[in-house]
View 1 (tube, rainbow, N blue to C red):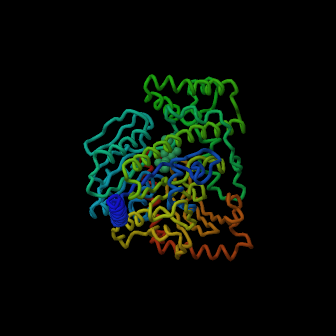
View 2 (view 1 turned 45 degrees about the horizontal axis):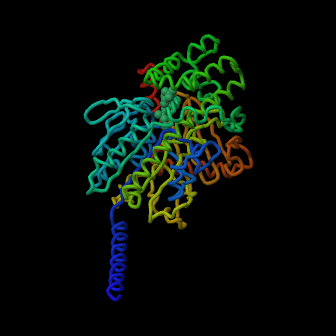
Length: 540
Ligand code: SGN
Ligand code: CA
């Protein structure tokens, strides 16, 4: 009896001791980091934010077990610039990438390089879109440029390879392959796991072809917005579902049908794009595809909608494919999280989920991004970091993608270079009241260019937003986000807002100085250089 009792005491004591040891090692070990960036994932289509459109249970897990940032924004709502900001912690005018045509200067300091120097192992799989080759990674396989949904090519240190399968699965297989067999078990790792999805032209995986088809998708109130109080920048942008979404490439109606029905089909390029993408499918995939899209094509030919009915039809088709593509992202994020669970890695890994920017899902009649209006200025941000972030917490501070690099470095215990312009989000993890920024700065440059969104910059505070459009337009817009969250009433120049307007003018100038973007002549030099470059490309 005594012996049994004694052995119990020993077992409990050993148990307690080893628990304590485990706990200690979790706290003291440098965390692994998985940084997930999708492309064009609107927060409106992520159920931790809003489940009106679909459920994303796997991505939502990161909010349930971590923190959901409700006011996360970008500095320049477009792909390559956003990625350069994330890597460097600096605004576009200082990191060499102001638009999608710029080449990333890979000699710059980036957070992966600093982590690598500090003893982390670093890897990237998936979308890169920065033209120069990745630097600061022990392992990398990236999509050339935008990449393809089916059987994508990948750039590797040993040259280009062609993968078999659907891009979101392929990237996940590579990421899990790295975690499972390539990874050093001695070093902490930092993995950039970047998806192409859900970028235009929204080709769902074979698993999700039927998912949203014919389901009635709620229509945004502003689908037929006429921009009554807005400047011409909105009217002249070429990203309306009604006028600029291609019935062939985007909505997947075969070009032959459109020609037969005399639809004024958009650019020739878009017709070619549909066939080119369809031809990437294997024969079996083409058959499966036709089983779903064939009847859609037949119905379109029968009803041949026009006018507002056509816009509603296009919106519905757009959403069916866009949401289908997100389904596969969600499932694959689930695979990664399960891998972490099953391999004892969840506890000591910080997982960040974000997108390179937001996206319009029919709001203001649009698809695409670029504008400083909320849907494209905001981006999803969810962070899980066990023992450091309380599960299920929500943050409403104004955070921005310049903060990603400082945050990752801070969490890894690496010194944040002084010239990084963002702030570490770590103080926000504890849910305490901390003194934080009161305003965000934004600057978009890609004009003239695809979608023709004019150059603009501006400031957003908790309540207001002031925007200046410039170059071949001179216009200011002011929104009271509390009274007008949909940004339908531009109140610039109205007497009631005179004081607020003046304050915001002062604030935006202060931010331009703070972030070293104050010189108009410099912007003019950018403009001239860009115009020259566009001419050389034959785009103007
Ligand atoms: C492609 C898209 C555009 C999109 C840009 C930039 N057209 O050109 O609609 O705005 O990429 O997107 S597509 O029909 O070829 O897909 S970004 O996310 O890379 O900035
Ligand atoms: Ca993008």
